[in-house]
Image (cartoon, rainbow, N blue to C red; front, side):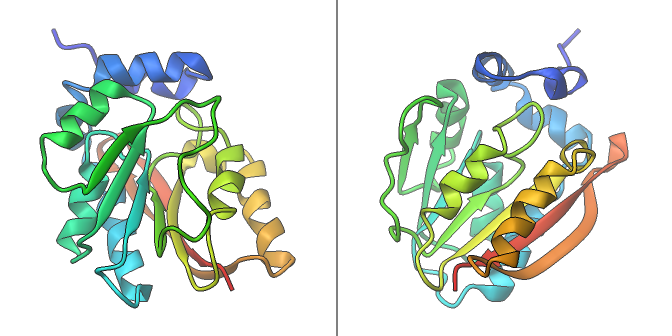
Length: 203
């Protein structure tokens, strides 16, 4: 019987996350498809509503096996670079031939990205329990230059902790970021899990 990683992914933290996603890489897409995973498509559609130039480069952070990249390409985005912690997930993404560049990152090292390098950043299903810590939001926000966009999601497991939306609201309240879009909708329908999708802009 195939191991079901969704049964325990939300309990993982820190270094164990990378190992889990390496182990999950071969069956990840089949398992999330079985559960109706729709957040990548929702995020890509939301970003497409506000993006001014679909040829401009996008950073797909936490690209995993490339499901987010496929969703972005389906909405007409042409220039995608992907970063992920998991070498095995990146290998699955590489096989899709949709990314200009793919690279593995280390959770303890600075990201190999310069501020202003991308017109948009996608962090789809990336920040939350069982994935990247909330501090990643700060890291990605610092990479946005004026007019740049970020699309991201918090699933219901993240939204149970008020700290996630509180962090976003700190930036909004000080005028450092502008909220263009927020919608609560389906995430993994077969498990009755929903997510908020957001699009923010650096003024």
